[in-house]
Amino acid sequence: MIKYWILIPVLLILFSSFSTAQTLTDDQLQVRVKEVAKTLRCAVCQSESVWESNAELAIQMRDIIRERLVQGQSPDEIRAYFVSRYGDFILLQPRTFVGMNWLLWGGPFLLLILGGTFLFRTLRKWVAQTAPPPPEDLSPLDERSRKRVEQALRSFESDK
Amino acid sequence: MAETKSPSVGIRSWQVVLLAVIFGLIVLFYKGLWGNPSYIPPVLVGTAAPEITAPDLYQPKEVSLSQFRGKVVVLNFWASWCQECKLEHQNLLAVQKHFAQNPNFVMLGVNYQDKEDLARQYLQEHGNNFNHIRDAKGRISIDYGVYGVPETFVIDQNGVIRHKLIGPIMGDNYTFLIEQMVEPLLNGTATAS
Image 1 (tube, rainbow over the protein chains, first blue to last red):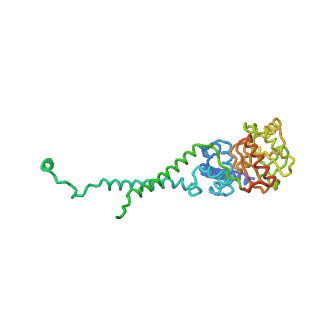
Image 2 (cartoon, each protein chain N blue to C red; image 1 turned 180 degrees about the vertical axis):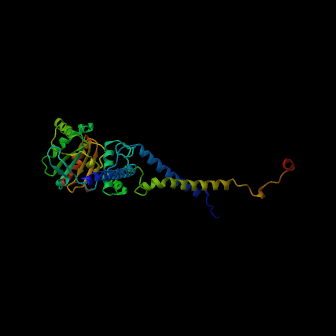
Image 3 (spheres, rainbow over the protein chains, first blue to last red; image 1 turned 120 degrees about the vertical axis):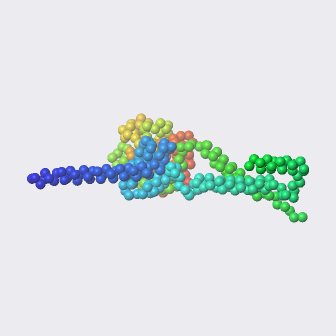
C-alpha cells in the first residue's frame, strides 16, 4: 500500500513535465504560425497581415496554417496553397521572378542603369563641348594683363 | 566629301529609350489609379473546382460537389448577415426557376460563416428553391479563394470553374450569368476556357 503512495508524487512530476513539454510544443507551433501568417495578406483587411488581422477570414487562415504545420507541411507549401487560391496578391512580399514581378524587382535597377548611362553620356558630351581651348588658340597676353598677373603672383608669394 | 556623323545621334536614341520607359511607367501608374484596389483577380478560373464535402443546411446528410459531375453547377456563397446577398436573392431564385426543368443544371448555395438558425430563418423570409450547404469553418470559402460575399462560381460539366462573379447577381451580372455562361454550357455552345 505504501508503494502506491510513493508512486503518486513520481506520477505527478512526470505529468507536470509532460504538460510543460506540451506547452513548449504549442509555443513553438505558435511561433511558426506567426512566421507564416506574417508573410500573408489578409484578403479582407488588405493592409494587414493574416497574423495581425482580426477578420474572421484571417482567423480561419491562421487555423489552416496551424493544421498544415501539424500535418508536417513546410511554410513554402502552405504559402503555395494560399497562392493557388488567391494568387500572388495574398503574399505580402511578391515573388521575385514570376510573371511581371521581375519588372517590380528589376525595374529600379534598370532605370538606374539607363539613367546612369544617359547621365554619363550627357556629361561626357558637355565636358567635350566646354573643354578649354588648345594653347595655340590662346591669344597672347597684352602688357597690362601680364603686369597684373605678375603683381598678383608677387602678392601671393609675400603672403606665404 | 565624307559625311560627319552628328555626335548627338547616339544620345537621341538613349533619350527615346528613356522616354519610352518613363512613358510606360506613367501608363502603369495611371492604370493603377483606376479600378477597385481591393479587387483580387480570380486565379481558379479554368482550373478544376476544389472538391466540396459539407453538411446540408436542412437535412442530416453530406453533400459533395463530385455527385454533380456532368452537370452545370452554379455555386453561390452567401450569408444571412450580408446586405448585398439580400439584393441578389430574388435573382438567384429566378435563375433556379429559369433552369429548373433542365436536369443538367444545379444551383448550390454555400452558407458562409453564418449561424445555422439565422441562415434558415433568412431563407424562410426571402424564399428558397435550391439546396444549400454549410461552411461553418470557412474551409470551403478559402478553398475557393472567397474573400467576401456574395461570390458566385459557374462550374461546367467536367468540374472546371468557368467563371467567378464577385458581388451581387444583378443587372448585367444576372443577364451575363444566364445568357453568356449557363445557357451556352447547357447547350454545348460554350467556348472552351
